Image (cartoon, rainbow, N blue to C red; front, side, top):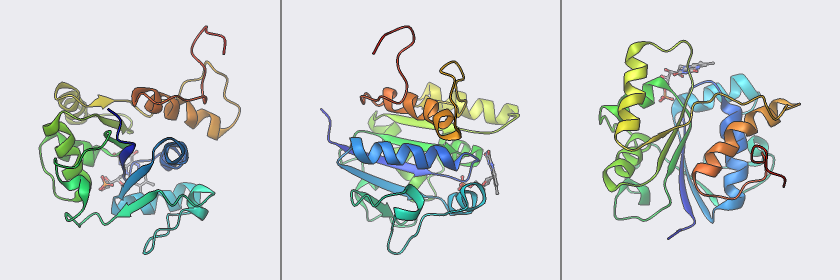
Length: 199
Ligand SMILES: Cc1cc2nc3c(=O)[nH]c(=O)nc-3n(C[C@H](O)[C@H](O)[C@H](O)COP(=O)(O)O)c2cc1C
């Protein structure tokens, strides 16, 4: 049964646009988003988008183009927050984009901050965990870590956009990945139509 609550982690892999586009969609589809940013996520967003999320207090207008009061930013060092515990029910967690460092820490059970702890909780509770990794090329350690995550129940959706819908803007290109994340969460989306199916 859906709780309408989603945990979203954003790390310092390249692809801040995926986080931006996904959060805009997720904020409209879920009642509540618990957002956790790694320290590097802010730096990469600034580098790639020229804008970083405002924190203390969290303010999404500049970063996401509108204010979404249902997005709550959690302190990544604060474990006194609902998703840190398996007792809290939610619809799962999406880590977008997911750095190789974060993927490796999760694959090896190193829950050293709230983001990796929440992922750990999803895996131990059998909840949906979607990771959107980005790196190229990948070494064998990275590939093994992603395989481990897949083996223990996470869904790996690489930040590898599709071209067959002929996206015309960077946003449309990024949305081909965002659409797959939403689809995997079981959420209706109209960013990308089904292949060979009329709308
Ligand atoms: C501009 C920029 C782009 C980066 N791109 C990637 C990337 O695509 N994948 C990756 O795994 N790390 C990338 N990194 C390195 C990560 O930010 C770094 O490994 C960091 O420790 C990850 O920490 P986090 O997982 O806590 O966010 C990038 C760093 C910068 C500054």
